[in-house]
Amino acid sequence: MSSTAVMRPHAEDEYAEELAALAATDERVRPPAWRLSPAAVVTYLLGGRAGDVEITPKYVGPRRLVEVAVATLATDRALLLLGVPGTAKTWVSEHLAAAISGDSTLLVQGTAGTAEEAIRYGWNYAQLIAQGPSEAALVPSPVQRAMAEAKIARIEELTRMPSDVQDALITVLSEKALPIPELASEVQARKGFNVIATANDRDKGVNELSSALRRRFNTVVLPLPDSADDEVEIVSRRVAQLGASLELPPQDSALDEIRRVVTVFRELRSGRTEDGRTAVKSPSGTLSTAEAISVVTGGLALAAHFGDGVLRSYDVAGGILGAVVKDPSADRVVWSEYLETVVRERDGWSDFYRACRDIS
Ligand SMILES: Nc1ncnc2c1ncn2[C@@H]1O[C@H](COP(=O)(O)OP(=O)(O)O)[C@@H](O)[C@H]1O
Ligand SMILES: [Mg+2]
Image (tube, rainbow, N blue to C red; front, side, top):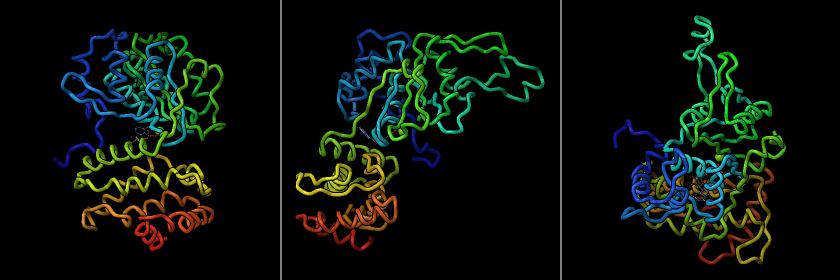
């Protein structure tokens, strides 16, 4: 691969072949401006077949939930994906926009510093001063572009934006129009426009959604993976993809370590061991699937560059420690208690126990 290759292609580019195959075989009705029918969008997300092309699953989770999310986008209500960090809210929103609009790039990142221009429009000040307000001096926001181009706009971490900025969305979502008083005009949304917002459960109370805005959204809560097997599947799949894109040598023996990382994360998260017999304390941070993915990917890099190429306990131990111990004093106690009471006693885990002891 050349050194000019992008690090992370957009979903619509990375999965262009799958999307084209779905579009070619899709015989169902497509809502206005949609590239695919709602059923084909669900297949794109959950996996399946399109002719002889295999559609890889992007999201592992309840089908009904994905159907509700997709159906919402075909109505005049917007979609709010809610969940704890690392439950694939951003990931699902990117893939939905890619499948529906063929464009996942119309994105507003919500932060405490997000200004109204990010939702409405801004100005090219040099032109504004030289010529006064004009079409040409207007800098459209991603939301404005989505309205004009009949696409999906994505708003990340909606509840981190100041409330007055959030409220700029109310007119957009209820009137489907964006007034531009400076030009005595407006942008009217074309059919096919909609908004996917994501928000973090943990941010509750930071900038709570106003009830006026909440009414414009259908909320879908993305859950943590149901079973350990689901979570192992998610992690192995993503690790294989990430490893390939980082050009790490392929690994087939990584599954044991992945299972181990997932087990540790699930036990610490839920506060009890998998057999339900021992209670353990939970650390302060969220041990999400996304973090399990980073731990394993980091371990693969260690194994590839400094080990014998096979992922071993020693390669994941450091990553696990870093993920678990976010608060240096309290979490360290939680971790050593878990090590001594659970890991030490477990059959087949002695190498992992030793690796963790070595670096703790
Ligand atoms: N249920 C799931 N199915 C597929 N991938 C998942 C799932 N849960 C987490 N992931 C993975 O976790 C990673 C991080 O998810 P992300 O969308 O950033 O989380 P969030 O926005 O909810 O904090 C993604 O790479 C995604 O592949
Ligand atoms: Mg996110």
